[in-house]
Length: 217
Image (cartoon, rainbow, N blue to C red):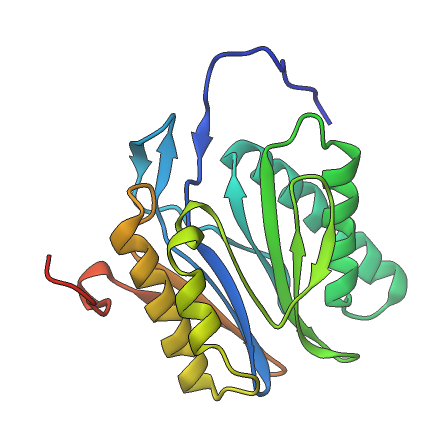
């Protein structure tokens, strides 16, 4: 991977963001806002889709430098496709997360991006993995990340419960993202959700004017 100049003062496009994933009974939901920023607070785009499909039933969402994240996910998608051809079967979610971890760890001095990888496979069903900036890999029943996540730890800790229904998990995810977007100045736009089950993946977009409100604006 091409090395970045560590002394550069130029700040690229960043996904100052809120991302999450949550397991429910039969699948997993991965979600994010759609705002990208440059520097500290300049909004460069309101329509970024931060949910990237790396295989049929495996998605990842990104936080940090958009350029770094796009480079990593592009390489991971290629490696995962090659892996699935070799194995003659769809890849496991953990295999996808492990590829992301290896790329992040091997380039930890240059990268400024973290990832949530989520999906469904025949071996373990719905799964969520967190890949940190330095390449650490953790399996979680739900997780949140990005700048907006600091505002919603209390909410998700209080409201999460195992084996939620699809409707409960969708409401949980939408509420959490709406709360973060209402407080974090670099999170906003619309809510992107992808529901992943054995049957496949379904992309849901919730416009900003349809999001729940928890305070007067």
